[in-house]
Image (cartoon, rainbow, N blue to C red; front, side, top):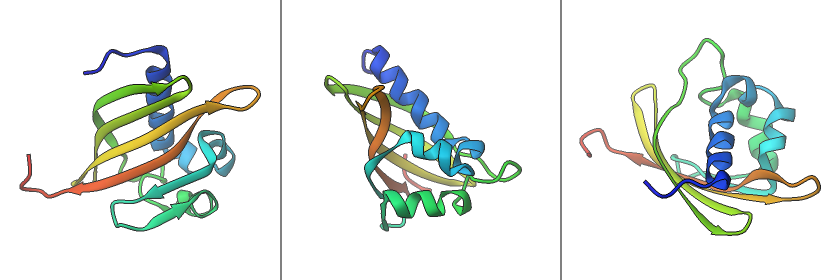
Length: 128
């Protein structure tokens, strides 16, 4: 694992918050964590913009309090530059695994960490 800095810990905390159903169900809470220039390439291959993600997030997997939840593991982070963190990790949801990569940047006044980019790549069941 990479050497964890406060910046990396804060980015991981933001990532975990975005997996929390109460945040996924709340556009206002999700808005705090997503950069206005946010883009995602999901495990399906679909490209999502900031507005599309905010509009759809409550209906996506992991958005129901009583439904399946994301389980994450193997977080690694790298501070690429002041205010820019790259995270990689694995997730499991309802039997589906994915390798994930995200960029978090800290900006604005007051400066807050927000996800700028996210990509998920499915892991085949027979893969290690």
